[in-house]
Amino acid sequence: MENRVLEIMRSVFQTESVDEMCSQQNCERWDSMNHLNLIVELEMEFGVSFEPEEIAQMRNFEEVMRIVKNKMA
Image (cartoon, rainbow, N blue to C red):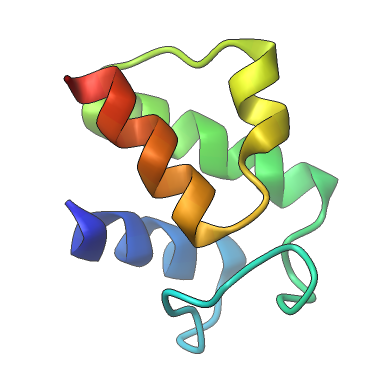
C-alpha cells in the first residue's frame, strides 16, 4: 500500500523526488490544488471517502498513510 500511495503522490505532484519524508513543507508542488487532486486519487484508488478533518490532517506522507490505513481497516 505504501508504494501505491507514493506512486499516486509522484503522479499528482509530477515529480519523482517524492519519498516517505514528503510533506507540504518540503514539496513545492504540494499546493492546495494538488492536495485536492491527491485526495481524489486516493479515494478512487482505495474506494474510500475522507472526512474534511482527515483531509486537513494529511500534511505529510506519514499522516496520509495513517489515515488511509485507518479507512481500510
